[in-house]
Length: 312
Ligand code: MRU
Image 1: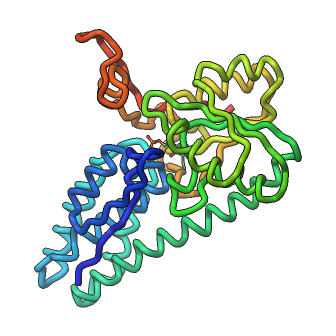
Image 2: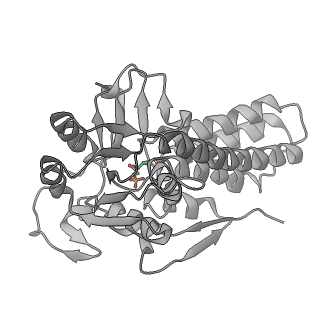
Image 3: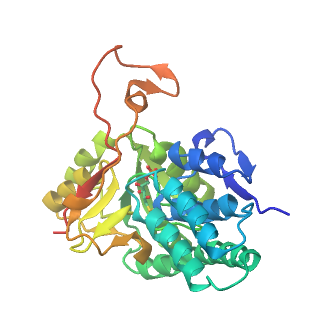
């Protein structure tokens, strides 16, 4: 029996809740690339299971050829998305566990890799719950919070990072209100965060990204919580493009700004944020909305998916 991965196709949300089941590594690679399966911790988990799908049919009889195949699959998944370090962290962890068990039988090794992917998944669930509990203490009764992109259950194994903190405060009875940035161009806020908060029964209000400044100026935002895709050694943080705008605005208006992230989001190999690779995506994400063109043909486009917020 071959292992299969089942995931929610997030590009269809909120209109349609469709689950995709596959044992094909290319389907999973494509899902990561096209943001069907997205969010930093979630793509780490996807990569780990991608390795399982890629290696399970291996005919290798010894570790030397098995390792070559494994290396190829890991390199393949490393090309899916460049910014979230969680993907590279999980793939390196898969390589490490294989090396640690290199003297074992190949079939047993396949089992070890499956077990490691499941472990990464379960650990993330646990970490999200712990971050949520810790972070909820930062939120006071009646606070109004602003968030950007989607750092919820969809972006992790369960519960979320920044959104986990927010929903946890809600479950703790803190009667909070949450402004949700729509998050252009792909609208993870409008489509995914709004959907998750609504399901949790949180008092959520959707805004366009360019409305955050005036809300802050009017004193309507008490705290800002966001996730992270890669945090450099000095604390500089890459997250969905537009996060930096919010951080500068928060600084100006003296509003506390929190980044909620697990250790797998840290890149201790780079000194600062200038070394973080920033993904540039298709111009179509800006010139079209769900397949409908909104900008003139031939217009030049710049579409970085992330920006870097300096640690200070
Ligand atoms: O391009 P995406 O949708 O994968 O970007 C996701 C983000 O930027 C999230 O804020 C980040 O992964 C938060 S961690 C749960």
